[in-house]
Amino acid sequence: MTIDVFWRIPTHGEPSSHRNRTPHRGDWFPGDDTKAKSGSVGSGSDGANYIDYIAEIAHAAEISGFQGGLIPSFPMTDEPWVISSLLARETSTFRFMIPFQPGFLNPVVAARMTASLQRATGGRALYNIITGGGGPAQLWWGDSASHDDRYGRTTEFLDVLKGVWNGGPFSYHGKFYQVEDAGLADPLSKEEYPEIYFSGSSDAALASASKHADYYLTWLEPFDQLREKFDRVKARTQILGRKIKCAIRVDIVARPTEEEAWAEIEKGFNGLSREALDKFQNPDGSDSVGAARQRGNRPATINSYKDLIIEPNVWSGFSLLRGGQTNGIVGSYEQVAERLDELVALGADAFILASTPHLEEAYRVGEEVLPLLRGKTDTAILRAVG
Image 1 (cartoon, rainbow, N blue to C red):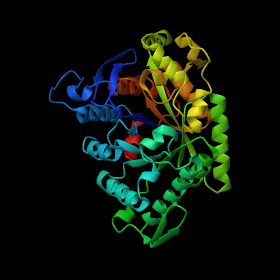
Image 2 (image 1 turned 90 degrees about the vertical axis):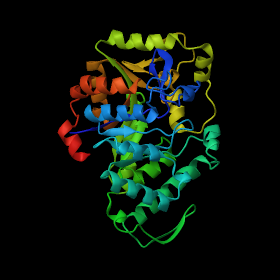
Image 3 (image 1 turned 30 degrees about the vertical axis):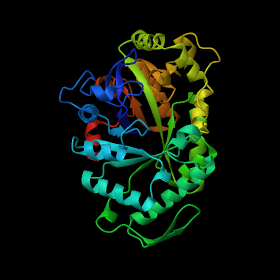
């Protein structure tokens, strides 16, 4: 069995380690005026800019055995479509996983954009379809649609995008989109349709994923919960006569020994303010089922980093250290590889891994962890796919 392993590109900037919030690399890191201090390490102008830094990360991931990378999309990042086209000229096999919310693009325009990128890069684009978590964060984007309407809109969007891809004429009359005799022109219509990684944990999300996704993508959760979630989405997909693979987005801290890995977490936790812990335990409102599932594993009282260990080598406080998802894997190189292999046994076919700082950790994880995975696709096959 082979599995696909992707890295993550920190388009939002990042600190130099989990235990040290400064200096900031890149020029987007929230909470600090780093845009005035651009450079390779955020310490002043040295001729390098943030594109140079994330290009280094893409290079590191490419030569360390990763198939490609997720390019995050948040209010405090550049646009992943643009970043992908910039990084395409800096890499040769690196594949770009582009996250976007379908409601913000017309599906025919999205098809033209994607086919153009496929043509320019030799088919290196993939989708991470996200439908939004609702609440204030969703309103930032100007989207007030209800939870289930957002997923209904996503399903229709992908119906249309796939319908026009092969040239048409294609017509569609749905609740959210109406298209008449549309279709991509040659040579765009001959490009490879992108693989779809689909995020979402609600019943509405699973219904949409089962129809369109190649990979169902989830954050790391307690392993028994993941098994149940994978079984549900695969059962729904089989009813439609399709097969779906499963992927997990997970942060890791891997070191030569388990003690060193937990020491990194402890130092990062000890540098947190009480305000940060209070916000972690009482987050802003959201109707995201996935985020609610993550919060459900948190203890009522947090006094030590150890309070957030929810399973062997699984820590549920990563969002305290760098934002994003909550759960991640901590341990020696061997332990991290073993836990990833356990997830493969549960049904995982792909991973999106990350660790801070992403540049050095791409080399570390690629050299020390990936070779230990029993299901890892070897480098020669990765480059042939790219």
